[in-house]
View 1 (cartoon, rainbow over the protein chains, first blue to last red):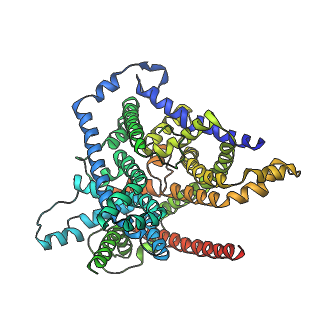
View 2: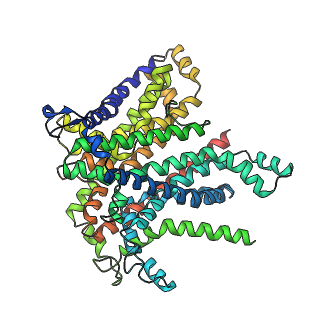
Length: 279
Length: 263
């Protein structure tokens, strides 16, 4: 078909705005010099050496840890609700799914910011906690607040893929298992969970990637002590002006994520996404 | 029945968690106090001030100008790209698909700094143009990904038949292919619009010269405390988007019924 030629402008666009920028960042990562003046660049691995110090590795470790914890919480909270929704009648089901999407229509920074009101000294949640007997619990500007912000923002990304796999699932399989004498627990653990695994994996990646690289949630709710790798990258590009070191951290983050993607996609053979099979 | 009540309670708690901040924002947009936390009585002051605040209106203008322009351009580019990708095979197709998937998988901040580096090297002035280019770049992949499945479902012989019967490729595209993949194009366009209007990270790194969208404006105000006019603005935007959603939903339900009746 001659029509395939109409894709060419975009192929050019991909090269210009996706491939070249990434190559540029890689180039920055392996050089040092004045970030504003390309003629001063010299090849070096100093940025990587700098990153290998306990401070920066510690931040990376903390970011990965917090992202993992929030992913696990999202999974624990999200799976049951996805399951409940998938068992509803189609009409109720559609409304409930919509209710997961609607919050995303309000600016996410503002929604995260609203947690400051809920968690602050005079906030409702703090008052409730004080009422129950937890005096002087600080919920703001610490890792707990960051975790809460992540779970809040990314929970729909866990629920929606799991839900869509659960609704597409062949109900006859569950009935067959029951007819063959499986009890409820067995049906759940041997039929439903294994069949919903692709959705779970999509959910995990969709929560983990934004969680590990965020700088907004930690910036708004975490205060100065809760810097994550995203905050470090932001600082290098926006304030410190050391684009080389910032690029090095971006590359490390990207390689880390793509590697973990490649690992998880091994478990996910039955994928329908748009990737050509590399990830 | 305990089980059923437990389910109800759990569902309620999850939705309460999701909607608590939104309810708080809406309530505080009617609060007669500049500071969050204390309630001083009901007022419509912020809604009136909103329409007198030139800066907020400018931010609103840029947010929508960028979202509308970038979603239209990305829908056009994405539709063409998807049809093009559908027509090719083998290694080239794999490479293109992987490149297209990269901005979806990559953390926003990496895409953002990469584009920032590109614009700096190309000596572009940071502002509306760079912001627009960045938004198109991160939107097109999603448009392509929502159209490709529709192209797969389409019968390729339809376009061939049209051309055999004398249609020019462009005519076949307009009269056969585009109508077949229309639902994908609409989903892609809406997705591009939503992504653009809600984007912060990539916009933050690729804008300049006083051009901010709503997210950047909110972030820059966050340290000093957010002006309640922003709460008012978001409340208005939120309800208009929900209303729009209901209208679209209603329409698509009706058209679905019509299609079903025809069949």
